[in-house]
Image 1 (cartoon, one colour):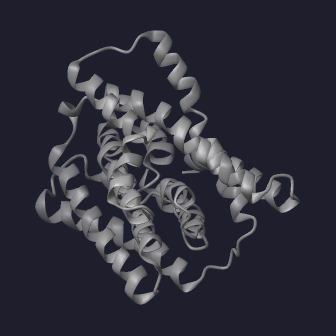
Image 2: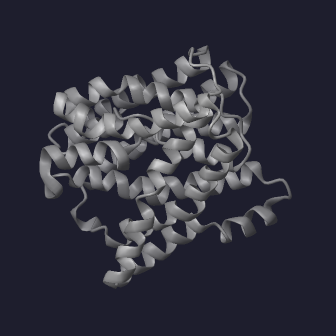
Length: 299
């Protein structure tokens, strides 16, 4: 437990803490942080996602458990969206992204390294399946839906904007390369890896800077959405697998993934589309902090 905590989780948070310190000290402004987040999303995220999608081997994925995980995502997203919209009275776009924060776990940056450490690269296939799903279908869904929700000039403009979105283009191109059986040239793969590793620290730094100007005391909406992420989503994944496919050997890793913290992408999309972040950002921070113990225990 201690090695997982100190070796995988806390080093990532050092970048977040650095952003917080820089923001509080006034060294980096919120405007600069928003610009950094935009660069991370539009430039470094495609470089990270494209080679991952291009090299996935879907034939090794535990399809039944993955389908149940996706069903849990759909149920919990709907409940979280309705909770944010009807109970807490948040706007449509913000409620949508709060729902995303409940079901879009930080699998790639947190849970995947932990699972590889415990099970080895070959044994971490269930987590790889979730990363594949979230980095292609789930992520594309939220990108497209937010373009439509935030579209200021109608559906046509939103569709044109989607056609120019580098992340969507990276997902589509990665799928084409994957399905065609092509192999990425070594220099291209090296360049993509070099750029892709910047996506996570730059986003974490931006989150820390913006958080430095926010209240850390959890509001009712932050507490409610965080509870849905940390309690309802893992419970739903466990219940569906226990009822439908209880003997699935992949179940522990799917539960591990569900127990992870909210991913940064809800925050990135909020900044990209001008959606308020006073609830989304603390949800990401609090779920990241509070999930460390259950993650270490489940691992």
